[in-house]
Image 1 (cartoon, chains in turn red, brown):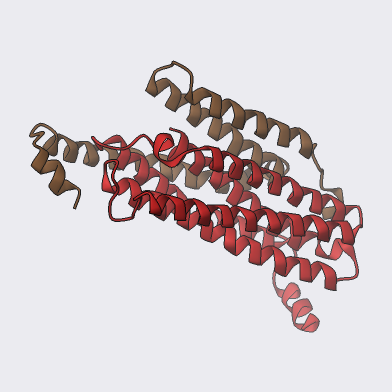
Image 2: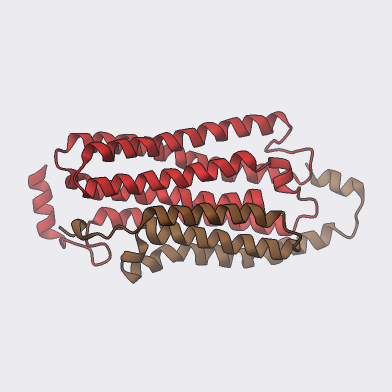
Length: 205
Length: 110
């Protein structure tokens, strides 16, 4: 495998001018840009639908923001534990890095659980994708699509983080897993960044 | 190795900024300002928070300018999309609104 890799690097330029550390990082950035278009389209169409709807319910009165404010805080905290994991790797402490990666995954898992709780609660109160007691049908539809799409990303992120913990455990040198951990971090912070937008547009405004 | 020279900004300072901005966001809703002003303020706060995450947590500040442009592209596309969709949305709203019959709003819900 390493022979293939070395042959490959002989053909391809060794480093990309955009991300000198690795091609993987550039790959993740391009993936995230594509993913951001997905979220951008969802949020932009949400904004357009809402601006032109006559009976859009007041989101924070219907959805409640106490729980989601806490979820926002939780996701910000998990972003901090993610960068701390990276910092510990650069200092050569694999064990601490692994713990911080685990805390990050735990934060994500709690976030998704709270979202499931919130959805259950809202569905019981009558918020459905096909209608709701407060006004425009699209209010419920867009709510479930946008938060669902984001929740799916968090779930994928938790699985991704758990896989990376395994990789960090297997590589004896801390710096050997620095790059892939940084790439994982990019994905995780992106999920946090998107939530900042979702929280503002779907709950607060 | 290039990684070893990677700068680590003061992450805790960014965390506190994010936490403070979130509290301000929550406070803004309850201010007696107009709906439009509150909306603009909330958008500005959200963009600031997102920029902090991208610049420091995602290290975009320490990357090349071209990578920053790649990251900005989706935001530009989404902004354009709002302006592309709005005229259509307003045209539909104009068609349905003046009638103001309860029957029309009922059927619009299905």
